[in-house]
Length: 73
Image (cartoon, rainbow, N blue to C red; front, side, top):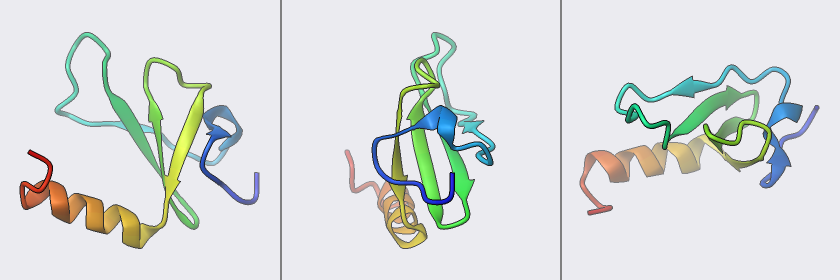
């Protein structure tokens, strides 16, 4: 697939190398992320063929800054 977009079936992102956070819980309720050529994709690890959310690198960096700064609770 040449271009990733929000809602794309995650299994169609053939070049994606999915990673699970080391903070994931053992029950499998977690998300996985993958670096893409033009951004970052995120999927639900329990439904690996389901839809993926796709973010630009700038959006992903802003999200990570917000997490580190405690902006989400």
